[in-house]
Every structure is written in C-alpha cells, then in structure tokens.
Length: 146
Image (cartoon, rainbow, N blue to C red; front, side, top):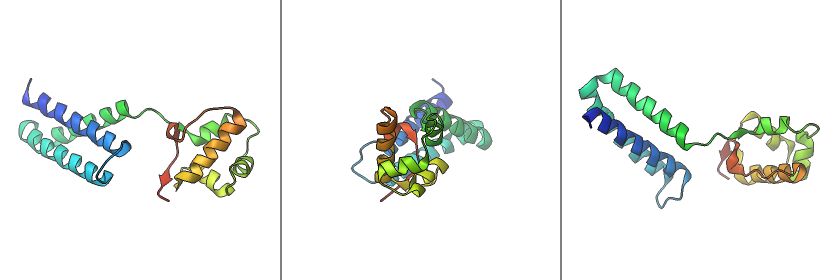
C-alpha cells in the first residue's frame, strides 16, 4: 500500500471515530474527542502535503471526510416534509397535542434550534396523531441544550 493510500485510510478512520464520538456515549466531552480527531487528521494532512502538495492534500482530506460522513450518517427526514405528508395536520393542532407553544413546532419546521425535550414532545404527538413510529433520531431537527 502506498504512503498516500495509507494516510487516506488513517484519515478515514479518524473521521469515523469523530462521527462516533459525536453521536455515541463518551466519558470525556464530545468536543474533546472531536478536537483530538481533527488534530490527528491535520497531522495526516501535513504528511500528505509533503507527498502530493498542499492543494491536493486538502482536496483528499475534504473528499475523505465527506465520503465517510455520508456513509455513516443515515439520511434524516426533514420535519417539514413529514408535516407536508399529513394533509390537515397543522402546527397549531400538533402544538396543542404536544402541550407546547406553536413557536416550537414552527422552529422545528424552519430548522431553528429547539430543546430536545420539546422536540420529543412534538414527535410523540405527531406519532400519536398519525399512527407513525418516528424517533427523534430519525428526523432532521436542530437541537439545543436545555
């Protein structure tokens, strides 16, 4: 295996570990895991630069990162798309069933950050009203701490 191929493989492994660090259980802060992985990727990129040049190394790292993240991240359904597939279901009705403000449901549609517990209430109400079985992890919702 060439040095370039070996480095690309190591970069892919770092990207995979970074993705798992973002979504899995961790004993240290997720930001620490991500930072360490980025630093390792940077070291591999530095070595690649000596072999293929700065621009080509940057392109290789970016392509590898994108490829790995796409492979590891299942496509999530946009919340707005789910609502659009349910004729007659309004944000007002959904908010009422969830026991939260309509603004939270609207924020989910607009991809504005909402608290996890509020988003979960909306998804639970959506499932109850539609007979679906979505999990929060299956839906493209921007979450914030709280």
